[in-house]
Length: 581
Image 1 (tube, rainbow, N blue to C red):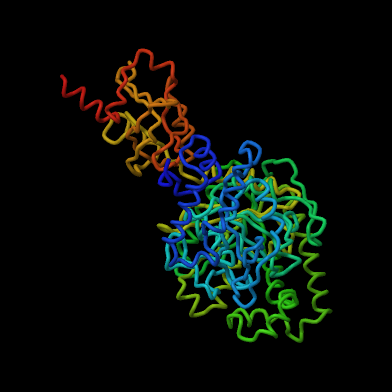
Image 2: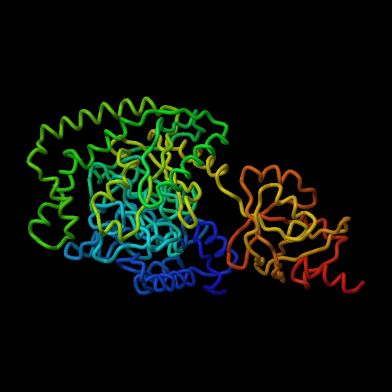
């Protein structure tokens, strides 16, 4: 056992598999996370970084829990620093505002009750006032893949912590896109439930009536696992609502915006190309794709920051700002004080509410049975560009997200390829709260069409072998050489031509050499259909903990086969056979 076997990408499934097989322990997972956080200190991910002392009580508690009875047993999660954790400081990225909480926020309490381990508090745009990840006295959070670019905000550290392997999932908050924009910029799932579906008790509010707690994860399945634990009405939370999930169904259609969209920033052209490709991939789902006018969404979004709704932010923080001059960043204070404008009267607020209600009704009618698809963001910026023009750059980031909570929609941002190398592109799916489960079905459908699949091959499909041409014909490309975990045996099957059979064994296995190839998802089904028995596709575990689809052999076939495990791979076995001739 070693913390070196802890996967670089932490998911609930990978961690539970590792715990169950004894590959690593929860203690080793936490040790690995602490080391990773120290290595990434310059990326401004954490306000309260993971520490053994703070996490130890939760590790000790695991010893009293049966893993089979606690669905998130041993799963480490990060928490945005406007969410309370008992006996930990909370600052909302404003040190003078900080205090030590006496309680867990409701969502944190529910996750801990399911066996999850809180590991630290993540950096954020101060008082959740931005979508860029640069508005923090604790430093501007770096993008997980390209450090010169913004991370997105305000849940900046939460997204990057997951992307960098510091946590399996992370909690953020979302008023105007803070749980979706950072997900898209760092290649993650960003799941935002319906307003009120997850309780917000114990959250330092941005706009109390609109705020949602959200989750960042690598997979839809992990986001669902979190939702199962935290969804539900809380009587002590005045903004909590009973919003149970309905039955999952594939939507009747996808709606996409009519007319051209606005793209911005230094990679605007690449973002536009990525969006055009994403639209083409929607057609591969075989669902109806229809254009819709999204002008009403933009009108609603303008109400959030250009209308009297900004007064809600000021109502919560006015007393602190007035009593602590200079405690907030200038850009933060400017945004908050904008809520005190003389023309934001009670009458103007009611007029805004009435118009939002009208728009909400029209949009809900449009979305019945459908899922709306938009770019999560129309571009991104370097951190230097945001520093040079913090207001305009930040405003652009919410172009396709700001409307969501005002119109009472559920949303999930999912990866949709890359705009350029190490420049993730994300799309957001929107649905009615009563059809939130349809988002998940739609997301799976799109991901299955848009994602390439990594395949592990150990024989005739490797480079230079007779069936390499088949891989190329299906659009696959070679990625890297790899090895299985030491859990396998390799056999030479009595076929003509000879082919290998890889078998997973309960003990005394070995590491076997492989090649990893990337194949378009649209080709994968046809490729698998051509594989003859006793071979098939299953999950192969690699030395670094990844689980990859690859060729496995049914056990009955090894009875008359030659055990070539000792050679460590198919190439070496063939070379040995040739040398004996």
